[in-house]
Amino acid sequence: MSFMDKFKAGVAEAGSKAKTLVEINRIKLQNSGKKNEIEEKYQEIGKLVFDAAEEGRWPLSKEQLEPQINHILQLKWEIEQNIELIKNLTDEKTCKSCGIQVSINDRFCSKCGYTFEIAQEPIQVIEESSLGNQGEVKVTLNVPNKKDE
Image (cartoon, rainbow, N blue to C red):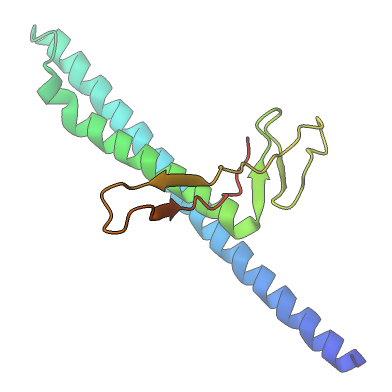
C-alpha cells in the first residue's frame, strides 16, 4: 500500500470517527434535555401536591399524578435507549464488576480483572412423534449469542 493510499485510509477513518463523535454528542444533548424535562415534571408533581395540601384536597388520587408519572417513565426509557445506542456506536461495554467502559473485544476488564464470558446455549434436539414418517427427528438449533455473563 502506497503512502497516499494509507493517507486516504487514515483520513477516511478520521472522518468516520468524527461523524460517530458528532452523533454521540447529539444523543448526549438529547439525554440532557430529557433529564431537564424529568426535573420539570418532578416540580409539577411537587406543585400539585403542595396545592392539594394547601387547599385540603390531600391526598391526591393516582389519576391526578398519572400523566406526570407516565411522562417521567417514558423519558427515563428513552434515556436508557439512547445510552444503549451510544454503547453500540462506541463499540464499548460496561464491566459488571467495577462499571468502567472497556472495548467490546476485551476479554478481561483492565481495571478489576473481571472476565467477560461468551454464553453458549446447547443444541436442542426435539423428537416429534406426530410427524408423517416414523423415526423422523426435528432438530432445533440454538445459535450461541455473544453476551456478558
